Length: 412
Image (tube, rainbow, N blue to C red):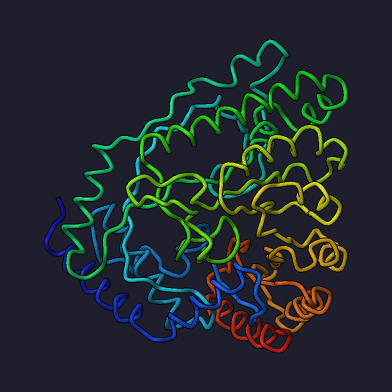
């Protein structure tokens, strides 16, 4: 299944990860996440979550020693873990665990069509609507079946067990519990069309949203029935926020052989709704979000959309605990709206570390301003939106060092 040479490389890296996981500081970091996730007063956590768009700047292809594609994926993850512990002073937790993928056949929605002026990398694109008229509503859901491929999942498990046996604990990875149907429909229908639909054909558009949410809710319940769910309340990233450690999950009556939706974190977002009025958000998004959030034990909301004008709507979401605060918010107003009822999950701007010349003082001054305006809230600082550091990886270490210093200064 894997060459001995590749296996030896991965096992050596895994031994280093196991050493890191045994460091007593890991327990201190875990306690920090448990506390903030329970809305207890604590030091403000700082977390660097390397975006997949720039992980190759940290661990270039040339730094990988394995040859098999699957082995190279695991090698990059292990090297990222080691690098983050050795180079970054944040609150990332390393556990002696290695995950294998749960292979899920999700319901199929009609693919969005995008036209790009250039295809040699990231960049702008134009949406070509695939839902062009009202009768096309029946095209949206191509296939509603949701099922686990247990054979493929078992092969993933066998591969991981063969490679990491006796060093790291193989663990089946959780299935995704976050969703953002409004963002999807804006790509399948076109944003201009969607905004017109909400005004000119509201009943039709409401039915579009109903079908999308119903499709995902049925899928999540199907995975629950198939005993495919896995707890996501420890070292996992909590949607786009901090780490998911929580002693409030799983829920009462937990059976480890049959994980339920109410034992998990769930999440929703609607980034494309940034300019949708609260009134329209309340009709076309909030009622459906409410149904989805009700499935889970704890939930998170938002991503790169502001919440300061819509927090009165989000407050109706069952189990809500974590709220993403992107740079498009009025930070003081957001702090007033959240109070101490939720985690104020602040995301610095994506562009800060991506410019040819980095003005560290100006960027950290902005962070200090946010922390001053959010005083009294349960704040976490999550560097997740960065898309490139232009190969200048040391910027990440410097940013984390200074951000943590500010976090300590502004902690209760």
